[in-house]
Image 1 (cartoon, rainbow, N blue to C red):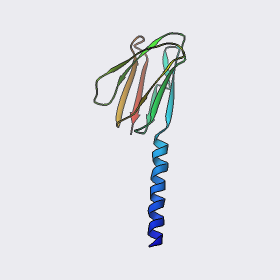
Image 2 (cartoon, one colour; image 1 turned 180 degrees about the horizontal axis):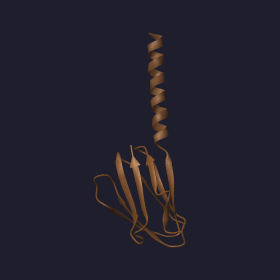
Image 3 (cartoon, one colour; image 1 turned 120 degrees about the vertical axis):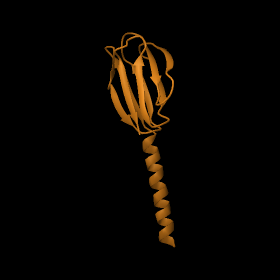
Length: 108
């Protein structure tokens, strides 16, 4: 019986470690009117932080899997914005000011 409890606690602890690993933050830069990197893969629950490292303003347009595009507003140089990947699928990110700026995030 003791070994069963030990295994159960071990499995629970392993699940907590996995959950903590999924709560990571990925940093995306905006420099020279481009996202860097321009494609990432991340787990559901991951926070994406987009930093404006450029000398110009940007306007993030976020389209989640199966959802409507959200306009996050103007992002001045030095500012950051964050969002959490709340479901699996492909997220599309664009700049409303610079249409060549594109980022794809695949969430699993």
